[in-house]
Length: 250
Ligand code: NAP
Image 1 (cartoon, protein in one colour):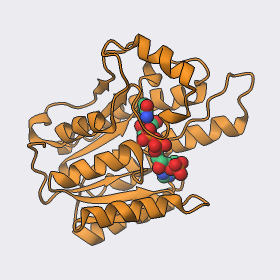
Image 2 (cartoon, rainbow, N blue to C red):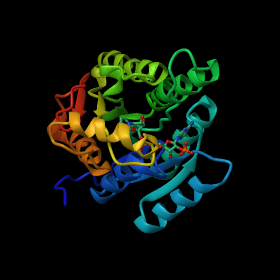
Image 3 (spheres, rainbow, N blue to C red):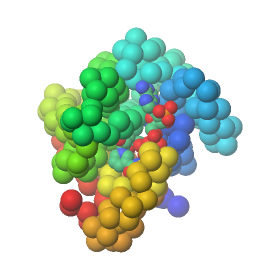
Image 4 (cartoon, rainbow, N blue to C red):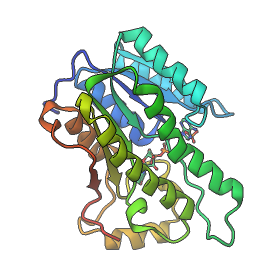
């Protein structure tokens, strides 16, 4: 139960067919927003099925839209579809992300490029496409990671991309301040999602031992922070990285 009214606002969330993005979409929808659930067209077709299931669950005020965030034209078309459907765009959440963890010795150029193009360039693509149509007093929220601040072993590509997202967030907060658009990053710690499930159990156990609150977070913990940032109450918060990590600082 959250006491946030986003009635009449339109939110677009990338990578929203599962995990944190799905939970953000549901939470913003529950708060009254129209939501565009972006999904990636995977070869097995799992994501379209998952996205359509969420839309069916939510009923009205929700559509799903295929776009690969690495593709600037596809992202632009998705933004156009959001505006054509609801007449405005108020909230953009850059959530889509991947991991390809390897030490520098084993990391291929493709591992590097795919993570940077999805996790960093993808964020740029959506910010660039959304900026001309984003409503004044709108919101851009970029999902970063504790990894972008701490720099875990084997994550040079991921940490560089997420640190880049934090830098991009700071710059855009200055550039869009004139229109009272706030731009913030949310940096999750470890959150129970399909992505986190790829971490070996013994590594998960070590991580939990370092987290003061003694557990991984849930997608809702991130979604609630996003909902708060969308509120008028958060109008004076911009250019920040909000950490949601159970007190974990590496
Ligand atoms: P997830 O369950 O893997 O969800 C990420 C979603 O993004 C997936 O649906 C994925 O589709 C989609 N995606 C991948 N490439 C895309 C592309 N090119 N275009 C559009 N969508 C694409 O991961 P999550 O844990 O919910 O993570 C969400 C965000 O939180 C990510 O940015 C991640 O880096 C960040 N984060 C997560 C954690 C955590 O512990 N879970 C911690 C810190 C930060 P596919 O499944 O088909 O690839």
